[in-house]
Image: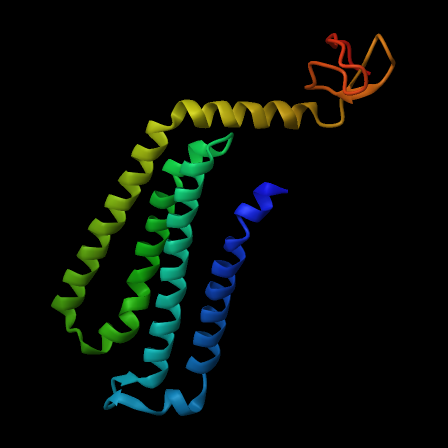
Length: 190
């Protein structure tokens, strides 16, 4: 119950992301905004609205990742290994998405050489973020291996049970002690 309370803020971030995306798409597709130009014939109000909405969603996503990282650092526990992975992965997603979002307002004003420079800036930024993700995974490889091993054991044990020799209660296959009488369980499954 405490875990749900501590993570209730996630819903607010998700709501902001969803509302920003819906509003950007809905308002950006309105004729009024599509036919009204900020820069004559190049940059429409629809482009500006989409840029603002999508940027807000990306900003909220990044703040969600940052806050999740801080909460995991404070709480510890079995998911604490994720604290080193969330922000690099979210940053990679944000930087990769920011490329096309920034083009909404910049493309009408760029020539071919500026567009090439712009592309290279994002290529370098995306590769740097990808390297950050790889280094984060490498730094947490022991924790990740343990988490994947435990998950694989639970998945392979799904549907299997152990019967307690002392009381006859049915327990999960991964249980070491009986949930009914607390006696140690053998490896025999039923």
